[in-house]
Length: 480
Image (cartoon, rainbow, N blue to C red; front, side, top):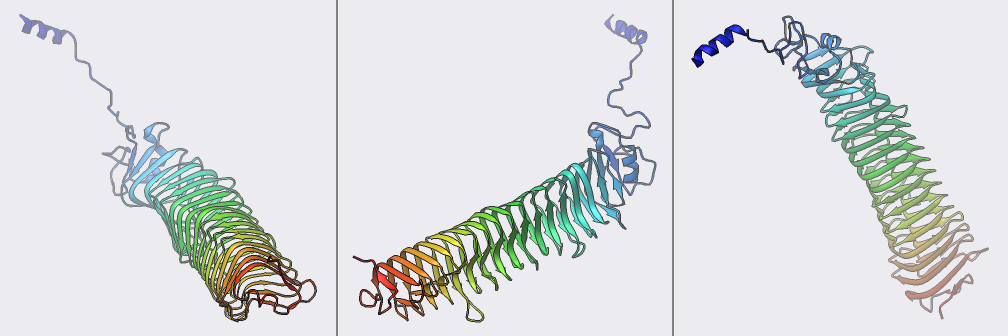
């Protein structure tokens, strides 16, 4: 009886055909996006089974909204140029998008996402505004530059930028753009690997190999964290009228490791290795840096400061040519600075600190093996030294001349090739708690002309008390 009732039911009510999840003939997009395969030779509808044969066809027929705005590219080579609809996601499996002539390979005026692609040739690899995200995208062979972003936001995760020539730019940010670049590499002789003009950028775990200049910043704010630069011939990092923050950054080679003009610098862990001129060169800038290291540098010394307001904590300079640190005008505060193995080519330099018309406070200063003077102050400089140790300085320990004023409390001068202290041409030295030993020319040399004065207190070691003054009228003792 039950079997008969079931047969009557199915004969009475026709079966309804399910339609959910079925793509009707002519629909090109599935729920997982549009598919493109340059090797496909038949008619395509954009589905995985019947992909479009060209990316241009897919871009012309991408429907609006939803996940269908994702375009999947099969491996292969796709000739451009291309213009991406706003918000499009273009995902490849190592597919190469190739451009030629003066056009960019891709324009993305409304932003979008590119993933697992190679952009090759063209004037620019990508020109964009709006929010753009690049994941594991590689650029190579562009004539003008890899990426240009104007008034947009760029995010780069992984991938790399390979220079097409010495005049090319890696990433150019203009018009108040913002960028985050992480775990990427810049390779080859970019003129400027990262150029930021009145924009903001943050780079983390980024490697630069070969660019003439790794960072060129004009105005705006840039932060570098865990960044290495090597193999270039011009300034490694350059900033003008902007703010640059450094955290664990190393520049090897280059004309200057870091150069600034009227900029603000802050951070810790900057290292310059074998700079041709100077490791750190600041002009008209404000800086507060911790744990700065300069290993080997050329004729402009380890650190060069001009008209700058600078605080350096934990400075180390080793093997600098001409000077450990030079400062002209401005203000300088040094804490825990160690300057060693300072050389000179012509015999007239090699000083640890070479100061002219500068206000300086230094605490915990150590200078060893200087071809010149440990601390030379001239041209009206005003210098305060606290707990300083000057060892094996060929010319002298401390030298004050041309209206310079040096006050030292807790000073050790040992093994100088000349005297421990020198005062000439209206220079004034006031030293308390001085330990002087094994200095070849004794304790003090002074010309005693004009306002030249040397005042010593609590001197121990060499020249006490018999040699204190040693017949020099301008040398006096404040010891009880």
